[in-house]
Image 1 (cartoon, one colour):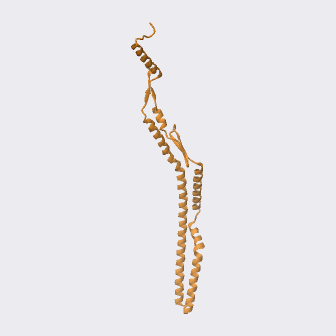
Image 2 (cartoon, helix red, strand yellow):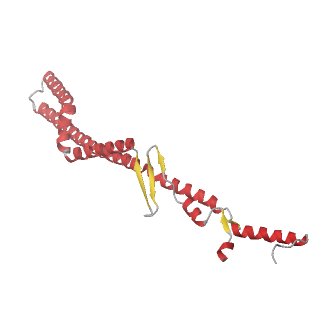
Image 3 (tube, helix red, strand yellow):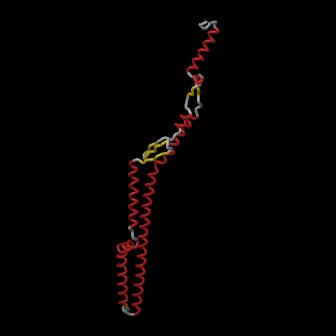
Length: 220
């Protein structure tokens, strides 16, 4: 009979607070998160649109990596020199040689020892210019490698940031649960008497009132 007189709690129980405090699943433009409370594990997923964009960036990074593997700096430098440097440089140097020959001819020094020394000096200076131009072409090829690597790493970084975007929702979802659980926990438990207890209290009260008025209960 003791259980019949046990007060009944009204309001949130400890179990209610614990369940309300669990992290909430959320969905955003970049994706969403879900929780497996039994396994104590959360899962983040990308939206289909963002997943396509991230996969495209990773694919472009792989293409850059393949291009880097096949890139030959020496061959690239030679191609750059022949295509962009040599035509103008050779034309300029040819004009320099013709101008010197004409000058030496007008001075009567063409074929002389002094004329030959001047021609040799010009040839050596022109060869030095060609070496410098080849060095600059090689620097250009190295700069191309650096640019390709930077593009590869930039694509990887952007793809990674997209994949990681939904992770921030974990903290938000946990904060929502903690906030709601905190509000519920702030309520103090209240208790009410059971139905049988209410009946007994009421009957006792009526009995006391009847006694005061001189009434007697039925029976012997």
